[in-house]
Structures are given as structure tokens and as C-alpha cells.
Amino acid sequence: MRPRLAPVVLVTCAWLLGCDRTPSDLREWKPSDHKHTSEAKPESEGDSPQVSGSAEAPLPGLDEVTIATWRRACATCHGQLGRGDGPQGPMVHARDLSDSAWQAATSDARIAESITKGRGNMPAFQLPPATVEGLVHLVRLMNRERLARAATSARAAAATASAPATSASAPAAASAQAPAAASGRAAAPAPGAR
Image 1 (tube, rainbow, N blue to C red):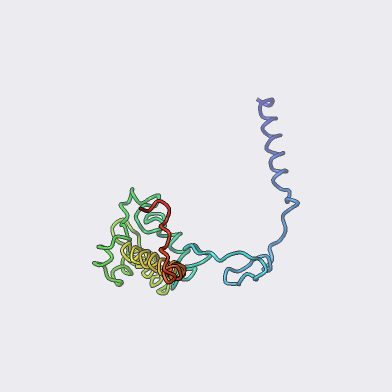
Image 2 (cartoon, rainbow, N blue to C red):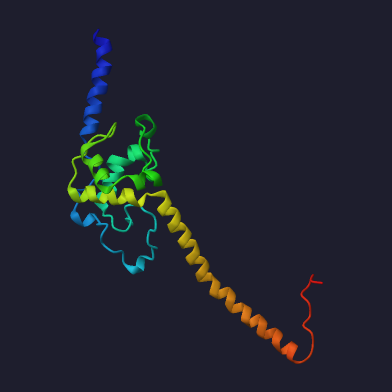
């Protein structure tokens, strides 16, 4: 029995001694090592600002605590966009929070109550009132109908912004044809036009 025990003891001792060493590249953390997300980046870095709804660039009216709470407590079931498609969503039958009909039928007070007291398979969360208010605001931002309206207005704004550039070229083309008409000559037809 002793010959079998010797290799086990030897491996265990080597493992314990190896785990006791401090890595050579490990240094003590200092507050100066942490760059807070609220600090603005210097212009010289040249990085463009984040446009996504990530924690780097929170959505309007939301703070980082609300975003972190959503990711930690809510996205597991409701998904990142509130569509009930999180990893646990199908198992617990998580509600699609982006459904416009549900959004219209549910009050802010009811959403806050569901967060603080729980509902169905959803547990109650003990959160500060400001965080609950932020989560209610976030849920309202997920409304699919509102997002579709916002996308439509963004496309319309982009079309309006590009329209003056195209209409500015039309008067130039008209003025180029005007001298030919004034001189009595007919303008040459465009290639392929008959």
C-alpha cells in the first residue's frame, strides 16, 4: 500500500508548493490603475464615441447602475432587448417587454411592483427606488412600436438631410440648358432617349 501512496503524496506536495508561489507579473492594484467610465477621454486618443446602448454609452436618461442591474438581474430571462429571449427566458416563459400591446396596457406602477414584489416565475428584487425607476424607464424604451417610429423618423431625417444636396444639382442642370434654349438651339437629347 505504501508504494501506491508515495506518488500521490509527492504530487500533492508539488502542487501545494507550486500554488504557494506569487506570480512574478502580479502587482498590487492602485486607484490610479482604474479609469472611471465617467472620465472623458482626451481628444488626442482619437477614438470615436460609442453609439450602442452598452455600458460605455448608456441610453439617455439611464445611469450605469440601471444598465448593470438589467444585465445582472433581468437579461438572463428577458434578454438584452427585453424580448424574453434570454438564456433562461423560454424555461420560465419570460414576458416580451418590447410588445407594444403589453406596453400600452401596463402602467409604470405595475412594472415597478413586478420588479419589487415579483410576479409569476419572476422573483422579487430588493433594489433602491432610483434603480427601480431607472428599470421602468428602460422597459419603456424597449417598446418595439416606439423603436420603429424612431427608426422611421431617423430615416426621414437622413433623407431630408441628403435632399438639399440633390436639389442643388437640379438648378445647375436647368441653368446649363437655359443658354442653349436662349440661343435658339435645341438641347441635345440625352443618350438613349428618343
